[in-house]
Image (cartoon, rainbow, N blue to C red):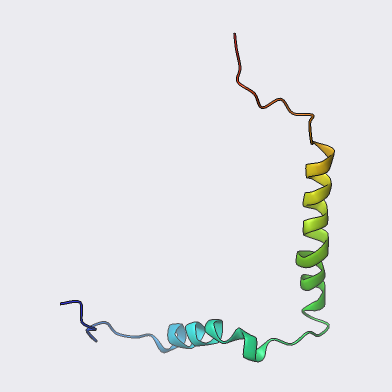
Amino acid sequence: MGGHNETLLKDPAIEEWIWMRNNTHRYFKINKRTTPTLIAMGIVFPGLLFWFASSTQDKLKLGPVVK
């Protein structure tokens, strides 16, 4: 009941991908390739989201529609 059965075949490529995904903190380094992604996801995207939220604040009427 609820035991671990080894009846499924394991794909080595999937197992390696899972292992690398779970251990990204060991292999991630900031370099020229990862810097644009870090800047975009850490500064640009939140900045655009904040700008959109603050520019549309109190301009949309989201109350109930009464006919």
